[in-house]
Structures are given as C-alpha cells and as structure tokens.
Image 1: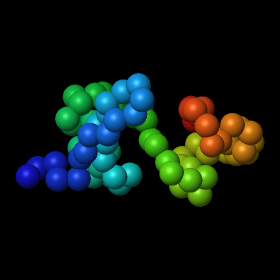
Image 2 (image 1 turned 90 degrees about the vertical axis):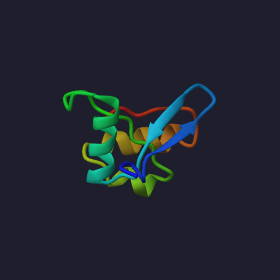
Image 3 (image 1 turned 90 degrees about the horizontal axis):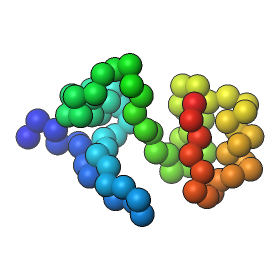
Length: 77
C-alpha cells in the first residue's frame, strides 16, 4: 500500500485526511490532495508541548494557547 500512514479523521464539522507529522506524511498529503506547496496544511496537536515544536511557534502563540486552550480555538502561525 503506497499511503500506509495516511488516515481519515472526523470532527464535529469536517472529515479530514491526515498523516503523521513527518516529512513523508507531509509529502503524502500534498500528493494525495494535489495541493501546491505554497498552500499550507493544517497541523493538529494534542498538547502544548507538541505545538512548541512547530516552526513559527513564538511567544505570542504561547500566550494565546494559555488563554484559549483547551477549547475550540485555532491558532494560525
């Protein structure tokens, strides 16, 4: 199977396609979705510690996370 780590996930509002947060996972998602690399993809995290590993995470994101998480708030980096 070519995309063995890709999965479907549902939330209360969408059905999404996902993959582990790895280079291969990112490559697979862009290929499957036929999405240009200039368009970013959503990264979902399960903890503040995971979020801190993301490129673009800064002090302002940290402040927003402490104020609004947990909750239904999306941070765009």
